[in-house]
Amino acid sequence: MLPVLSLIVLIPLLFSAFAFLTKTREQARVVALMGTLITLVLTLYMYFSFDSSSAAMQFEEMASWIPSLGINYHLGVDGISMPLILLNAIVIPLLILFTWDDVRSTPNRFYGLILAMQGAVIGVFISLDFFLFYVFWELTLIPLFFMVNIWGGPNKRHASIKFFIYTHVASLVMLLGIFGLYFAAWDQTGVANMGIAHLMSQFPMIGSGIARDAIFLALLFGFLVKLPIVPFHSWLPDAYAEAPTAGSVLFILLKIAGYGIFRVILPMLPATGTPDMMITILGLLGSVSIVYGAFLALSQKDLKRMVAYSSVSHMGFVALGAAGLVALSISGAMFQQFSHGLIMSIMFMSVGVIQASTGTRIINDLGGLATKMPKLAVIMMLAFMASLGLPGLTGFIAEFMVFTFSYVNVPTFVILALFGVVITAGYHLWAMQRTMFGVYNGKIGEVFDLSNVQTFSMAVIALLVLYFGLNPSPVLDMMITGSNEIVSLMAAMGV
Image 1 (cartoon, rainbow, N blue to C red):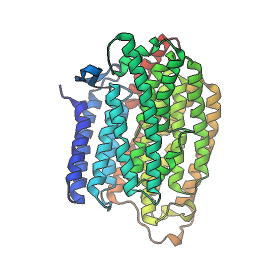
Image 2 (cartoon, rainbow, N blue to C red; image 1 turned 60 degrees about the vertical axis):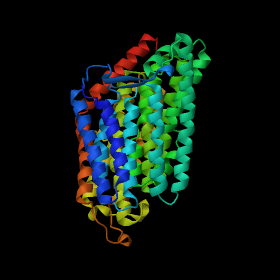
Image 3 (cartoon, rainbow, N blue to C red; image 1 turned 90 degrees about the horizontal axis):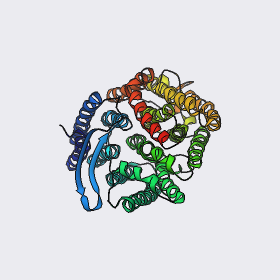
Image 4 (cartoon, helix red, strand yellow; image 1 turned 60 degrees about the horizontal axis):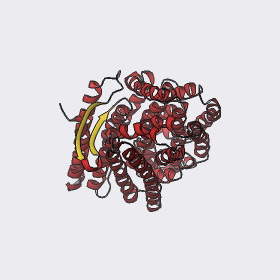
């Protein structure tokens, strides 16, 4: 059997090394495109071979790595991880195409870091051993740090260091939680084992409720900072806004925190010492993030920072759907991750094109761009409508499911979060009206519409937003299967 999981991690990492060794921009981008296209072909093979009706791990690979510590090279994919791998595999080659004519220093490093990021993110999604999971988790920090630090905006050093400190400290706290799980399970069974499923199965056996809460909160903290949601979000606007366009899109594709909530946090939640309090924390932070993030986005003058803050608001839906604790609310939260990756990729690409063409991204300095940039106007309009939740587009499916089915268990938080929807519609429409419509601002000078490769890459993503908005089943069915498994596990444990 083809070791396809190993290949979709190793190929981007291998081509990353090749890209670093290239001498010209042409060589670097061709190597990058080849690596990402091979990864896409393998991922599509997995997707079409995947059994959406099964909650079991598929394409599993297992080899002993450090037997004395119970660490194994264990990979697998299920309905929680498959859609996110698909998202990553589709968008990254389109991102390479989007930057095809991008002239910047050291293109070998630029494309090498993109491929390294892709390999590390996929590694997180398929790791079934906590040690391997943490190694890939930390590896994702490195490409993003250098992407902001080398090619970022005027405040790139501050933004990159802030991002690194916030997320690395959170990762260390998460590591303490993993150690707590590992040593507790070792003490109970007498066998060292870093398997994620094994450690979670031993979690309810820890005698002290306080110890279980401490371990759970350490893991939850690591995921919430990386997500991020309020009040752990302050690294995000700086990092997103200062990063180059490709870096901003890579941040968006960094869905490992939400994945961690579904893979680790929810199955553990019933066995915590105070599950009701943990549900309240998740629901409260989710609803506050939706509303507060929307207010922050509304107050921005910089278009890119507005998009960045909207991301905080949208990540609130992930936490709120998880707190809903029914299969369809959790599926909605998973779909929000998938949808957000597509929509925000277009939005950051749009901002990047506007900034490159006009020299500014201050909303009040723009105006009437649709007359000069009609192709961008159409694609950007679709992304903004999807982001505010217009029916027929992916954003609507995710928000509808989260609101409707989370109401069953956390109605107060859903009602609070509904205020965010009104504000979200307001800032999206305001930004579109100020940038694209009205009288063209002649002070901008001559501007140019999307190039052919930019049009192709953005249009493909836009069509996916439309396709999955009208027909979400190809990814939603596997998410529902995975969510049903989580809910069944919770029910068996009394939640």
